[in-house]
Image (cartoon, rainbow, N blue to C red; front, side, top):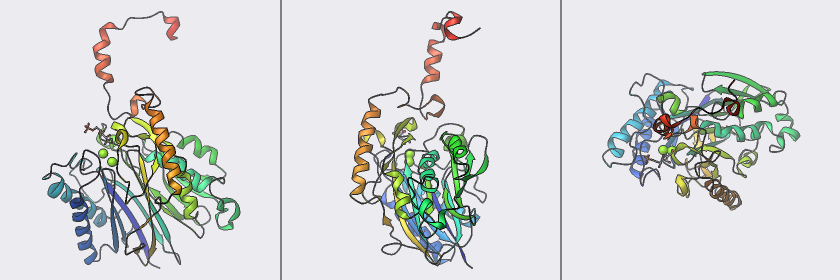
Length: 380
Ligand code: F6R
Ligand code: MG
Ligand code: MG
């Protein structure tokens, strides 16, 4: 049986009007390079999208996950786009996410985000790719829990016998670089205890418990932890398989109806609502460099290829009047959060902020701090 891999590899290598959107020539060059790789047989099919200042490559192939040729191709595309388009046009933050020059077989750890899912195709295999801008991998924790573990979101967990065995979540500790598998529904409280800490624990994979069949994969890189300093938010991607033994497409989209707060937004230092938008019309940023956005692209994966509504052009799953309601709520939350200015929790915890003046302020005030009565600060 042929196994197919869906690889989604994304990077911010420059954009127009600040962080608004990549230049069309950047997308065109990426498409040309992928079309060449398709002719050699390395790539079976592909789609190039953008959200905010990020470019994403969706590639199907038969090489498996973590493949050096596929990762090398994506790396070369981001390098070429930077050198041939972003830099000559002086686009904003040209080459931003290419943190290292040391490609040696795997793009992970070099800056770009990666999500990959290898599986044996079913009779029919609907797949959704989500991509977010102005946030981090922990942004998927809440929707992934709802999709695969919350019976109030996913009716199939209760009324479809094929979903009754539950799911296994692979949770990554991004600080210590270790992972743990947690089974729901039995261990759902343990799962929630971990993934509530979105800056540290994120869900990297989900498997159907019954047969260990892969159901979802998310990108987990945190640029700041790679670079040792804050260099922009990670803008994560997520692949989810749908229907016939997995949650239905509508159950997978449902958690985004009430926008949840995610870390990122302006200067990577604020909590803001994740607004679901059409990738064709509204995958850009505006108010306060946001609010953070999420797009959803739907395909069938058939005989190793992406089948969209026209060629590889995907279904634009948040392009429906229903989501106006959610966008409206997101706008209201965004404006409400801004009324708090730079006061937590509108502003992030100091350890999570991309921009800060705190060290300078503390230095300036150092000599003016006076010891206070110990009782009041709890020091013995
Ligand atoms: C956040 C982001 C933007 C920038 C902001 C300031 O990830 O990309 O919100 O942080 O526009 O950018 P600079 O410092 O380049 O002017
Ligand atoms: Mg971005
Ligand atoms: Mg950016």
